[in-house]
Every structure is written in C-alpha cells, then in structure tokens.
Image (cartoon, helix red, strand yellow):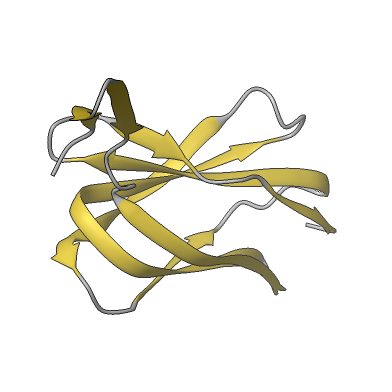
Length: 120
C-alpha cells in the first residue's frame, strides 16, 4: 500500500487527506559493542516490507561515510528479526555508524547515527 491523497465531500465541505506509505522497516534497536580488535554492531527490526539489504556505513566526522559491508534483509516480515555485523578494522576516537536500508526497488533510507568513542 503506497501513499496518496483521498478527497471526500460532506455537504459543501471538501475534505482532503494526505497520507504516506508505511516505512519499509521498523528499526527498533541499533547498538554498538566494543570487543577486542573489533566493534560488534547489532540491530533489530520489528517489521520489514520489501527489505533487500542493509549497508553498514562508518564515518569519522558524522558527515562523510564509507560502506563497510552489507547484510541481507528478511524481505517481508511481521516478526522481530535480529542482525549483526563486525567492524574488523575499528578506528580509535569518535566513530559514527549508520545503516542504509535498501528495498528491492532500489529506494533507501538511513537510520539515525550511532556514535562510539573507542580505542582501536
């Protein structure tokens, strides 16, 4: 079900309702855990619609990101799904992570940033 506009009429009043499509993924958790020689990133989705994959991205400044790798999505799911990825070359100091979720049709959205201060 996509977004759109619906128009209705009551007496001489026009009612227009604008609605958007539901988000393709309900991201309920995104966390990072420093481990010896790596950073473990974990996230949980509560639902997924046409979710092809997640790209895990890293940044030193929170603006310019590099892709570290991808994790296959569940496609379509109404149950909780858990994912993880290891950053095997962690950087010392402040590091920012985010997820780029891509649908089967190529559309994508970004998660909120996750900030981590670690000693590599």
